[in-house]
Image 1 (cartoon, helix red, strand yellow):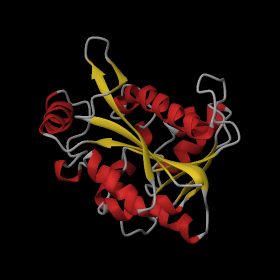
Image 2 (cartoon, helix red, strand yellow):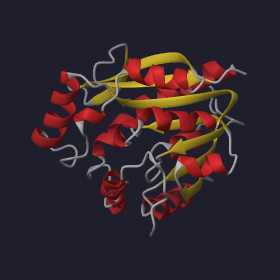
Image 3 (cartoon, one colour):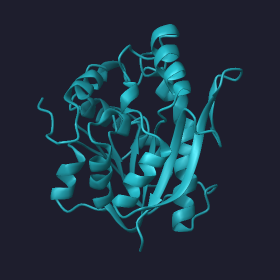
Image 4 (cartoon, helix red, strand yellow):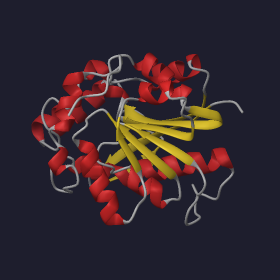
Length: 248
């Protein structure tokens, strides 16, 4: 299958994730850390969207009626819980081999999620816009972070929200994510991350501001080794999530 064209894409990164398609939903496979990480980022994204749109975050379907785009959706690990929260979800990913896996899994789960092999630039050209745009664990894999954020911002409706999660560029993040997770514990395939591509919260905030968005929230996501879970935190030294709104 062909890979959608976009200036921000790193084709080596796309190919690396394409190769993981068959094991994406294996909770004990190469994407195991993503499955463990998922509940924390879903909670942060839910709360940020609920605050932006005046919803009760503890309601059964707090995102009901909102259109949401998951950019870099992979095989749907994040898209599915967001759909269960009531959002009308579209998922796009340039790694084309992941899309049939995502579609099949959503169908088995009884979820109506619109998946397609596409880059964000394609949707901009089509004039698409959404209440919420999510790019989780994506910005550290693109070539041009400010350009990528500017593209995402064009897909956010007035009054809408951009939700991002990524890895901070700190010595601690290098030690835990690359040395620890990839080479020592082997939680992730070697080469999954490149330290130079990690993005600080200040850099990501500046990229959002340049794209016309105002940061509304910054939360850390921390691993608790004693409980073997990820939880929302005030500590942004390694993983963090950022919300930025487009003025209405």
